[in-house]
Image (cartoon, rainbow, N blue to C red):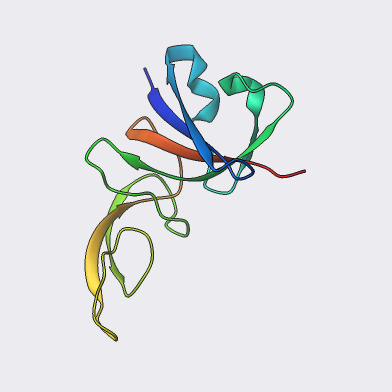
Length: 115
């Protein structure tokens, strides 16, 4: 049974709200990707559209757009999500999760779409 903690950010007010989904409530989010839009009614926000911007799994590994599937991989990064500050020109191999939401994902980050 999937269980997600959804963090919804509102860019107009600069606030964030947390909603927990369990079981059948969370099923519609499975197999969606980063960048997909969903209806706000799934999370109790009627009439709003939400965009998936990222997330992380139970171990804290972040989701990265561009890595296909929902698997964990070690990738070489020079900047971006999942990488702490590095020297100029330095690259590091870090473990990240793919862009697809699976049951292994714990937290999903969403933003309310403008307009």
